Image (cartoon, rainbow, N blue to C red):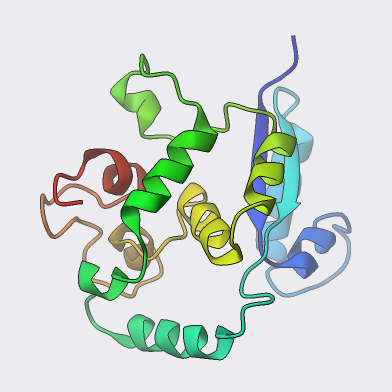
Length: 180
């Protein structure tokens, strides 16, 4: 039986390459050492690293960066700032590619799992528009502009959903919150 696999996605090719060279001194080395220690100390998991595109090839990249900086500088964020994301389309695409059985418990649904081979996931995401693929990567890695992540990077005061006061995580946003 094959060991369970862990897929780590990053839009930084430099950090992915530097995880291979653990003796080299680079910024963020403490994170690389933690990843290396996890990889070498964990014989029960198959860890694979994947590069995913950020703003590469998007003509409006400068405009996106400008809007992102404005949003990050706000004291609070509302879901109205996320109006450009079509939630229904993201839910449909996520459900189409995740193939999650409906019999999972609530605790299992709170974790984002890759139920198919990582190669199939990356092939499926390669066929999507870059902006949508990037959004799906952000949601899978919990780096989307939701309050839980924004609170973690100290951009908002609370990690709670403004609608129902539950922690605003990706799974809450896509699966549980009644407002969306």
